[in-house]
Amino acid sequence: MAQASRFSAPHFHDDTAARAYLEALRWPEGPICPHCGAINHAYAIRPAGTYRCAEKECRGNFTVTINSPMERSHIALHKWVLAFHLMCSSKKGVSAHQLHRTLGITYRSAWFMAHRIRECMRAGGLSPPMGSGGTAVEADESFIGRIKGEKVRQGGHHKNAFLSLVDRETKQVRSFHIDQANAENVAPIINTNLSEEAHLMTDQGKWYRTVGKTLARHETVDHSSEEYVRYVSDPETGESYAIHTNTLEGYFSLFKRGMKGIYQHCSEKHLHRYLAEFDFRYSNRIKLGIDDVERADIALKGIVGKRLTYRMTSV
Image (tube, rainbow, N blue to C red):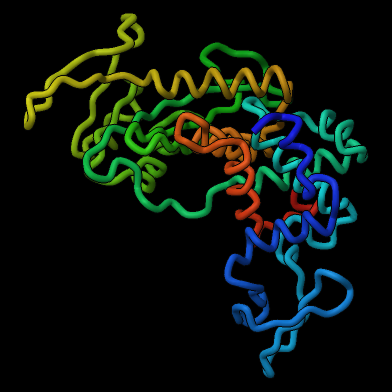
């Protein structure tokens, strides 16, 4: 779809069209009452976009924005839909200043809106486990930014650390903010997210040694000796396969270009939301057959239960 025709869609310019668009995404089988869970058993009342549950025991009123980031928002609904599309279709993200200029809202509102959209991008639950069926999962840690008040020291100890996992079969990535790279922080994440059948691939970080023994296989590459890929033969099939963490290195490069070039600064308390944003776009990228429109629709479907107040983003 051409860029001009894409942004000429009615739901980017009109609240009524935007509401209808959201209803079709959130309620494909008809309105769902958030009070009692009744499906397609409600009728429209005033004001426009409001429904009343027809269940005698309920009779609650609701709209498509209830229990979502848009609930009780003073920002026009079509601007919300456009913001979702902009953040989902920009490979390295969109700054709050850009949203502020494009949508014609205050910078504070744009900053808050961006964080709520990131919350909608955050995947809920850890199912299915990565590496199911014995597929390869890369794990690696990286560092970004600087913790306020900390003196610069060697080895990234003055920076914010995060751990990422990528399943080579499903092409899905999951990232986690950690206090520091050590066995105490890394092992629980790997145990929770990986199947016991997984083939774990890491560098030679000592924090992977113990947890690697709990999995079907654990292979490493020695970056300190400039070894970045190694080929071994599968003992069962005899086929050759590559041991490396280069997939994650590519992801880290994209994440850091976005953080330094677009966002420029990220406080430690918000790092998990920025990680969720980049995880989402990477796991739903065009290479996997998901275009910009589909990606935005997936994020919009994730609005349920993601009501985020300003106080929650400020603490």
